Length: 294
Picture 1 (cartoon, rainbow, N blue to C red):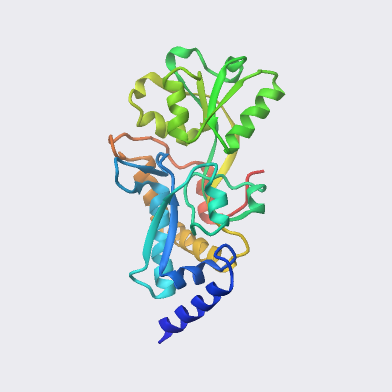
Picture 2 (picture 1 turned 180 degrees about the horizontal axis):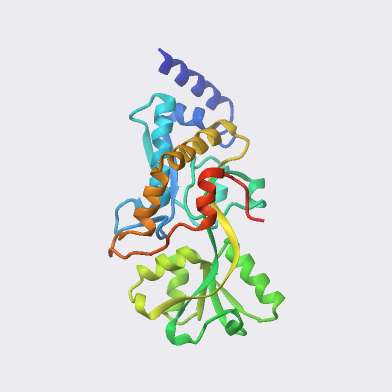
């Protein structure tokens, strides 16, 4: 009877307002479905192996959150749909109600916080460069007048453009639609380097066709937090997502998942990223902050 009441209330509310405005848990209950996003090449956070569904650290976090949604709504057989997103469409599609939850490699920024809400930060990273070892690129000064790849709509695009302008490097910025596309620009010599979050560069190199030919170089620019995104003005759903992450952090399950994806062999090639947890993330296991990048 309780489940029927929830469903009737959710259906009535959903009919009364657009999907983008409906509270997420009520929207999910009304449709008996949750739609979550994934990235196709964000190793080791979210990436696709062959034609199978996405795997990765953020995918495991997503599945833990979905399990808690099932418990909250008393829907053990709640359907889950997976939607691939890009840097360009991940925010618009979340805002308009196309999907309900994004956990991946999205930087928590104040600017984005005007459109969406962010959960507890689950990773910290910074912009570096991926280049061929034969390119002679060792730092940002070596990029003067050269073509640099990054992804459209990313914080890295804004940062590298600003860095080029501030230091009068006159870089030519080439934009890829996703990480794999930008990596291909370096591998095919269309660009001398790929500017992106360092952890993603290590993952892309590890799973590239010739990892030994590539290296991550340059100092770290602007350390930034990653966090799951939910729709704005939906404190009930944000509280659930934060609650899942806090539980994983408190019980040690988060650390186990971190070791699984950053310090152990990962599919498809069994490579090891060898990236121990950084000091900022260790501190946030206790602080559990959702503060954006400065």
